[in-house]
Image (cartoon, rainbow, N blue to C red; front, top):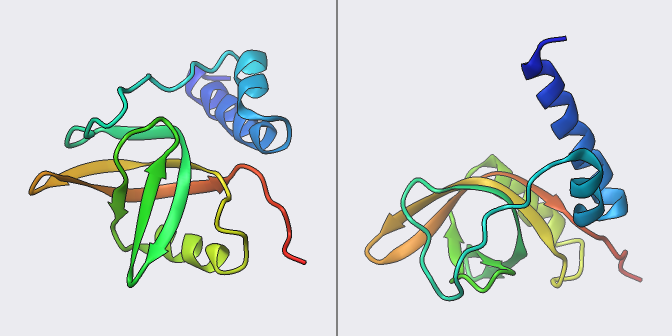
Length: 128
């Protein structure tokens, strides 16, 4: 198999396993490097690719904010189909759910915005 196919299979397996056994264990078992560390309170730079960034979504009025667990400033999430799917899930789950996010960061007038590509809920507790 080509290296590209093996990398894709490894990444797919990693995502599938990370949901069930935790990100840290999946990283260790499959040799996937953790995301880079980023200082608390700092803005993301334009064009930064977010990969495996843990955090929480919050609906505020007609906008959604993503707050990373690493202490970085919250970002307004730009509207697209991926966000629409997150909103549908948020309305059915407790607000404290942790998500693993993939996307791209933009900057505008001193603030950060997230163009969401994919969001995976880390753990789920059904409402009763």
